[in-house]
Length: 374
Ligand SMILES: [Cu+2]
Image (cartoon, rainbow, N blue to C red; front, side, top):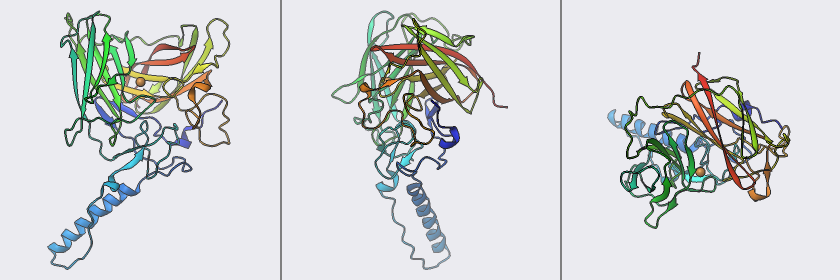
């Protein structure tokens, strides 16, 4: 099946994150309006309130008697419903994101400050091959209070990625929340070294956060700067894992920094060569992809931009990643799964992509080059 063309969506499809910060794409105002309309009014109101206030002050300075009421911005002017994945999609009313079908969460989309994270390990120095507990406590950037409420995003409230510096080791795991509000998970790292620990969550009332922390095990003697991965781009984009063969096609064939590209996967049964149409939903989607560059300074988290099963989108309504109101366990996906992604800088990137089939999570890693924009 065909994807809806990009112009339908505009150019703001996926959330793109770099460094420890959150980058919010500009709103282009062309999202399908049948689900909910883009929200420009609260921001617009806030701006007009500011303009009115300036006018009043200026008027007073000139000694005029201006009786322009200047209402203080209420909480409602700052709170909206936003897509937890596409933080640039906001709405005044509850509903779902027209691009991925995610339930909108109540949030303050115009407050883009990073939340504060306390990351600790038990034991304090982690030993390779020995179990360790990772603990995360999230604090509000303004009040400093511990955050206890998190939005459900892709079936979980906290997603965690652990990647070794050479990018050979990749884990996508889900910490559990302790009664005190912090999050913990036990992990055994395979060998001494430097790891990147990436937290992905949406605090209730805040925007999507994607926060990286280093983890260095005992016995690591390398130099962090010079030990970064030396990624070698794949020459063939077909790999088999656990009975599933994935062929990746990049569109455009060479990604360009700063421009959206598509990662098109075609999946086959490795034994028969037949197209695989029995993908299972995993965390509310038919695949997950995390893309990192060589020195792990840039990372992009992407989900499929539609459901690759049995929809004709040429004339129909805007596609959802999963149909609303349907139990994901009753659905099958494949053989095509497409992710979109925007790589912020040129260089070599590795995409870690996960599919679920026969109740097993299958991890694929593909490495490719991203060219500099002309
Ligand atoms: Cu996850």
